[in-house]
Length: 358
Image (cartoon, rainbow, N blue to C red):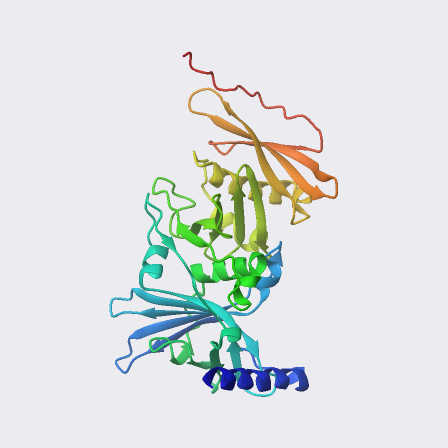
């Protein structure tokens, strides 16, 4: 009975969307909102974001996304939830029809980067299963949250002095809505898992502002990595020797690169150097990455004098005949880069590491 009542409510809500005038639509202002207790302590935060950009994930990232975090007395996150947002053009209300939460062991594992790579599984929900979130707007830059959880429900006020960021569940949510939409249709498989990766020896990528995920989705034996900064300026997917860029935010080149890569002097981490190569090409040869489907393929590794290591990369674009070569590049662990367009040869001297005698 409860399930039928929820579906009826949603049916009326969706009908309202179709029949109402778009000019009267209500949307929450993007930013960070805070829920406080009677003593004035912040007990939960809500982030409202949308990310404009290009790539396969662009449509999912552009959708208005609502992220919530419950906090304990020490300010530690005890629960996270993410959902989409569907507005009513006539009433000051909205609903999240799909999403998931992280709590308990899943949340703990999502915050644990260790050599054992503890797995976590998003706790998905959907209106198709009788579960959804609700939001209303009483005015004064406030949002009332319902149907999320005891710790997350309540009244939130916009805090314009605090920066909004993309929580880890929101990154996964945008990724799944692009690659695994059936997970929200009547609980269809595949259902996969994630694990957090972090290398404390790397200062640029792993300084707390980047997510590095091991993805097994759909659940088969192989897995791949998903890397993104916490504002989703860029998302990089590594599968075997290929590096794809499923999302690049519009402000990636104009408002982020200078600060993000200031002082970078190279790394022994190949993934980090691929990110650096991407921003270098964006600045110096943007036509090679004009098509968001362009990707890097690692061809070979070369050892130079001292501790210099260089990686040879070909820049490819998928087409009906397989792949078209757009260019090639060399990037070193000292942040030295050379680019060649089309079939032009690279000029940097390349020495392969000597094989040890058996």
